[in-house]
Image 1 (cartoon, rainbow, N blue to C red):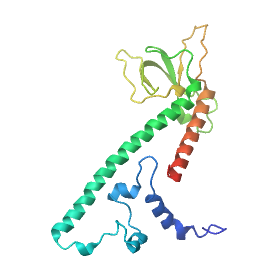
Image 2 (image 1 turned 90 degrees about the horizontal axis):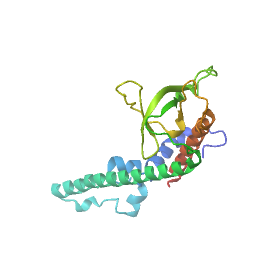
Image 3 (image 1 turned 90 degrees about the vertical axis):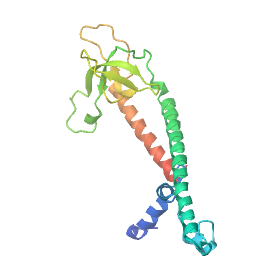
Image 4 (image 1 turned 180 degrees about the vertical axis):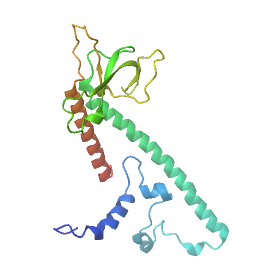
Length: 216
């Protein structure tokens, strides 16, 4: 499309962007254009072929009829937003099930319980250069509870047990052992498992984007 050298991309960029915006998305079931304007985009073929999108304005003779047509379009936008929201929530639930199934082999043999002390993986140091010997784990913190989706709610060690605002994935939390502990239980959450988790998350996002582009 853009030629062997790719120099024609400027000519096709507006068309490709428009095609992307009028294409149905897997997560919402409608196109971005429909979400914004409340109806499917009217293409030249709709006008030439006389489809239902090419409104016959000759039959709109009064202002009342015009206002009625416009009002119906606005009402349809609200309906589309509701449908898009339902489909998006369904897609998120399917994504959670997919991720839980993919990460099932990383479940702990000895699950963390409320009151256990843990360390949290510091993702900000993962992509930085010159941090070879930097401690990548923050903490310790206390486990308050585990959410139904698997993420952990953590608190500080102070007397008020101040809750951390963020929720932490199980693959980013590992058990903390105080100095003097001689028997250490096997913990699945080493730095290697965290890095594997990061790679799998990137693969999952790439798969999602690929599904999105294909309109699934």
